Image: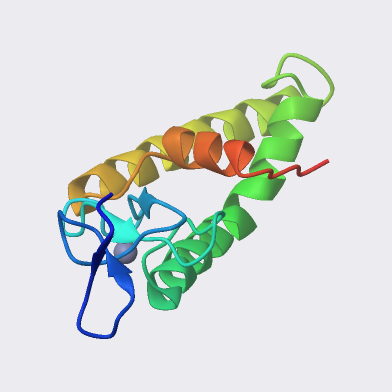
Length: 128
Ligand SMILES: [Zn+2]
């Protein structure tokens, strides 16, 4: 970054005129439209609060459907023990929904959940 001073007297970078002390990020929600936003803090993952809310609201709605399926699929080992019929159906439904949502996200140009979770882990996310 250069040490050029902008109109306000604050330093600006030579490439885009905006200082990015915490670097730039790639928003999971609008990935193809906004390639690199300027982070306001080191752990910022989304370009705007609206995009963070859009991502988390969609994920929460999906989670409400997916959580009981995932629990039953896990507890029945995908229908190989306990209530095999329910377990097999839960595992199949879980798989179908995840595949559908993966395809919807890709069609909408959103970041994959694998990449998103990797970024959250690097930012310090610990669900346990
Ligand atoms: Zn965004």
